[in-house]
Amino acid sequence: MHNQTVAEFDLPHLAGIVIERIESGPEGTSLFARARAGTASCPACATVSKSVRSRYQRCLADTPVSGLPVWLLLVRRFNCRVGDCDVRTFVEQIPGLTIRRRRRSQPLQGLLHSVGAALAGRAGVRLAAKLAMDVSRSTLLRLLRVTPEPVLTAAPRVLGVDDFALRRGQVYASRRRPIPAPRSSAGTGPATTPTALAPARRTPSKSPIAGTSFAKGLQRDLDAVTAGLTLPWSSGAVEGQVNRVKMLKRQMYGRAKFDLLRRRILQPN
Image (tube, rainbow, N blue to C red; front, side, top):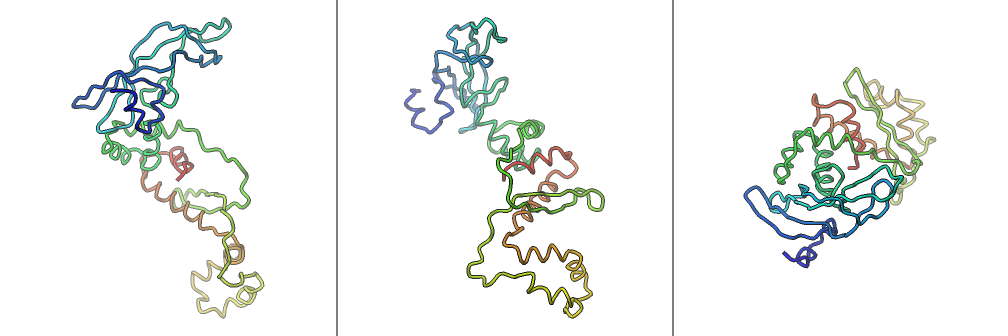
């Protein structure tokens, strides 16, 4: 297989290797390759080295294409010539493809993480099997736990808060989420003001729903109801996130602890 054939496909994570031969079998496809670059940088001091100490074959699983391809890379171990560097020898890494001490490629690692974030362990394993990816539920959960949490880049202007039950009647938690830009009032008529709600607040007993549990709930949370009717921001984003939390809880009921639930909640949708 020539390199031009590989270049015809949009596979940027393969730009750093040269495929020497391909072998197909009943269990998948094996691709034998080597690094394209003649040098490598030390992971400790970032010094470029040309001194090759040894070579060995590394087995690396990649994203499935008509089966389960396994990359058999011929990697090199380099010497670091910097005298005060803590690293004496190091193994070259292919940018976008290999990860130190990992037997899966970066694209496969990201794909498995997405499956685990969406479906967790047992359901994620069933989907991964359909996609020709061999993985256990413990591995999917471990990928979720080791992934760094997303960092808030800017302070939100408006923060929406809503409560949900981790265990009804016993343990409760709060969900906080930045509220998007104010909703447009174009075509909806004049906005409701607290002054317009004043008569209803003064004479609640004249309402046709007076005395019902719904009315009592409105009276108890009257400030929140007034804010929802008068402010230009919508709490729909927070309500949607609470529904998402409930879905995640049902998926993992009795099978995971709070730390894993927190990881899945913090993952982007």
